[in-house]
Picture 1 (cartoon, rainbow, N blue to C red):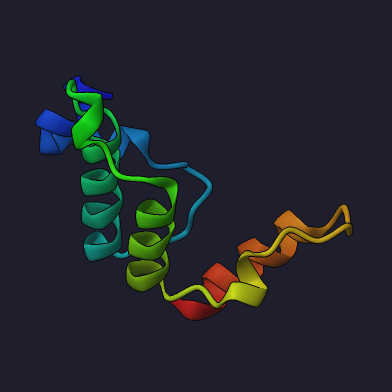
Picture 2: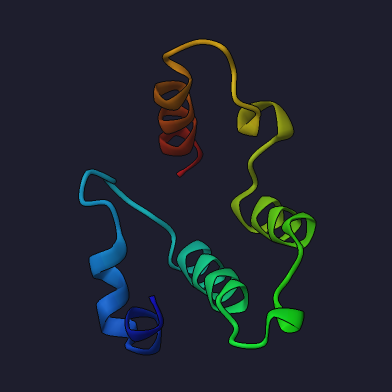
Length: 86
C-alpha cells in the first residue's frame, strides 16, 4: 500500500474498475486514512472510532446506509446508494 500511496499516479490502480465514478477528495481522504493506519509507529495509528468518524465525515454515508443488514443484497444496496450520491 505504501508504494501506491506515495505515487499519486498509482492510486488510480487501486480503484475498483467497476466503479463508474468517484470523487477525488474522497479518494484523497481514504488514502490519508490508509496512511495513518499503516504508520510504522503503532502508537501513531488511529483508533477504529477515529477511522470510522473520518470516513463517515468525508464520504457522507448515513449510519443507516453503513449498517450491514441481514439481506444478501445489502452490498448491492450500498453500491446503489453510492451511485445515487454522486
